[in-house]
Image (cartoon, rainbow, N blue to C red; front, side, top):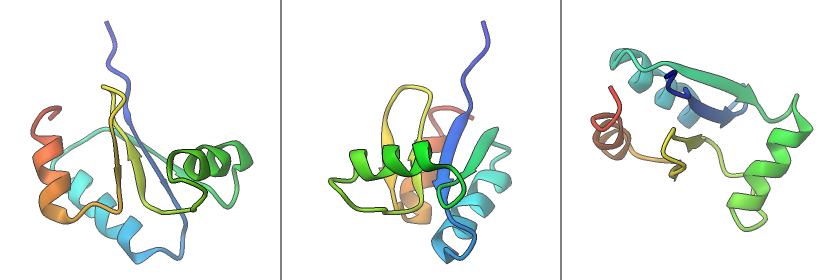
Length: 83
């Protein structure tokens, strides 16, 4: 059984997106990064789950849970469940 990767929705100009990627990399997490400025379906998903806002990073986990603009501590705590 393959585990679905973590999906990070972000933009190239977003410093919080880069910070979240650093945390994921430091924990050896497998994830897919999707730039919502280049993927309209991803942008629509982000808007839908954030009540009309393009809040990034929006991070979707294999269990279906979502973190939006998490702090390093919040992201690390969530990653401890998967990594």
